[in-house]
Image (cartoon, rainbow, N blue to C red; front, side, top):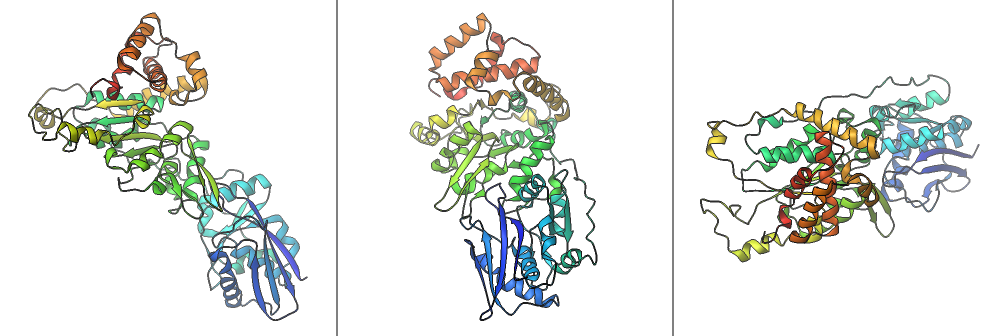
Length: 503
């Protein structure tokens, strides 16, 4: 048999389109050519495959060899096709039965000694293979990741020799018994934060409704401590959310660690990060920080220090929950339903409004500092909270303070509030559309009067008006009330600090 084919999977964003690997042996001078839009790593596979076959004591055909990766107009990247290319070459030369290849899909990179090495993007390929009803053959080092996909038939191998022995019926590969490893994340407790009762209340509201939050306060006020503890208030991911998050990390440059299965991501990029690092990009497009924080928290400390164009790139994903990256030859769409938490100082030195008078910034300097954040971006952030400096008495524990609840206690209320939202409209309040706001966020008569006065005095935009309603709906859910009252709206309006005149 001089022609053989096998099924494999390419990587395109978080998708894994099917690729048919066809190998043909013909008369002519010995050569091996690969066609079908292969990039450099794929073209180099001919050298890896040749050495792997020879060093595995198999016969490399001395023919004119043509390898086609179909469809031809789909870009192919990485070393994931090495195993399929090698097996079709062996089948075309009669060393393994070609008919056996039809029941499997093969992905894996070959070492020069014939060993199978791990690849990125296993989860999308595993999901597609399961839906196609085939058995996936992949490197043993990737089995823990593939084992996260329920009802998937897969086999792991350490070398091409083991795969050949299985296909020849000499020694069958045994399906690995792998179950998802669920480990409790190590997160700090909110009870460790002294003072800042308003900040803790804001975190509870943000966690319950999935709202974005901007904290404004002097250095040392506890902004970073509060932000790092938001993750401890959120309920565990369900299976679908965990799989979505794992798929994104699987195709990222860092790859996915199965030990972090079912854990919400927390990403805090440095303010020197570029727009591509934040939203994703490259050739081929890879997910950025906002996609890696999908179903988790994205914390942007020192918000005004980020490049303005970087921050403006957040506007679309904050609204839509996804980001589409378009390049000349590649397009990819990544989910980006993250919860934004940001922190900033009130002025360049950080001490504006300090009663001790430490601030030496001029009004012009303060204005330029705050103008780094555009109005449309701030309008998309649900909550603006001003945090005061911590007093010495609070810091030293010499002043009686209200009993601070633990993260576990607050997380119980957060979970109950989210259950009310999911039962009502199958989504968190922050994700409600205008029609759902009109249906579920109707305040009482006093609340309508208060909201009308706030719109007139603060000059709120339509977007801010809707966000206040959604925020009030969340506060009512925490209180277990069906109706939004004036007290709920008053608290929600209080979280729009940057909309106040003269701020």
